[in-house]
Image (cartoon, rainbow, N blue to C red; front, side, top):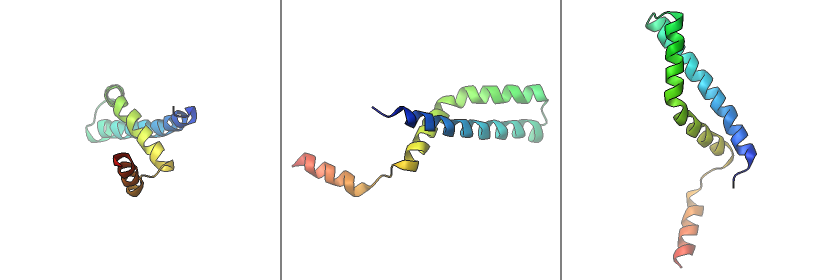
Length: 84
């Protein structure tokens, strides 16, 4: 089982991803499309609702890749020892 601190760290990464996403959606909606403030906030809420599963999984992947590196040669050794 993973340590609880892994999920706490991923939560901080998810927060950063979500804030960046919200700012981007708001700027696109307000500045580029010229929508009203209320419409821009509705767009942010809809995008956040739709992309929450993606940002959660992406944040866990980012957090684990900061600390654990994938080495292909180790995976090959495991496969060859299993086959023997």
